[in-house]
Amino acid sequence: DTPAASPIPNLMIPANKIKGTLIHVLFPLALALLSMLVALGAGKIFSLDNSVVIAIYLVLYFGVFFGSTRLIPNKHNKNDNTSGVAAVMSLAADYHGEKAAFILFDNEEKGLLGSKAYCEAHADELEKTVLCINLDMIGCVMGKFAAVSTAEQRLVDYISYLGDEIGLAVSSSQDVYSSDSTPFADKGVPAVSFARHSPPNTATIHNSYDTK
Picture 1: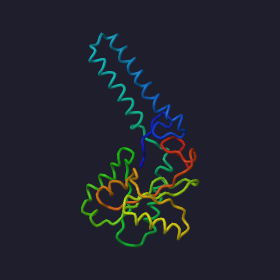
Picture 2: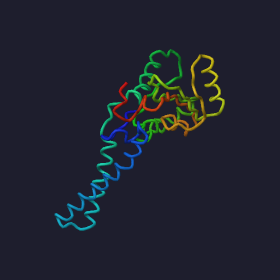
Picture 3: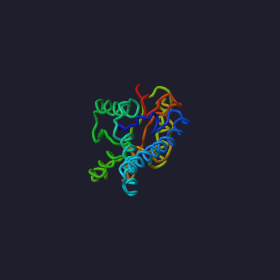
Picture 4: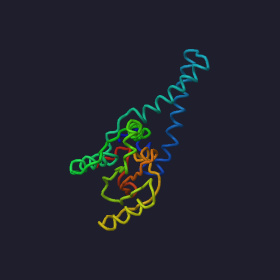
């Protein structure tokens, strides 16, 4: 999970909700206005047809928007999701059993592309897969663990019971979690995503503050 980031902080997920909401609204409006001014200026200077002016506007708007939010790599991804990668690699190193696969997926932010591709390429193996465990953003100190199961209620109850038994405070629920567990659930594999939810502004993601 190495999400792309905009040069404008918090464009994807705001650290400050009010500031983030304003940016979500103002950034597209400002970009649209700037693109329109440039297109109209080019049309006037070079006496371009209206259709060409509209084409310039569309290319500028969508090109800049896509480029600023998708093409610039985000190096600030300690919690989301270097923490999950480190946990998977640590578990793989300590695991001495059988019949388990430890898999790292990329391009989650672009539409779960990595996990979807895996499920398509390994459909036969999924028929023998009994559970998918997804680790997403578990690196923050403050907060609480959440386990979201896209499966039968008994898995939800089991995780809750196991947490009580080993002394791990975890909020176990049944829902669809928007991460790499979902493509497995779509293929009929019971899936659970573990995440650590933090208080506001203590473990922000998708911006330059995700460094610890």
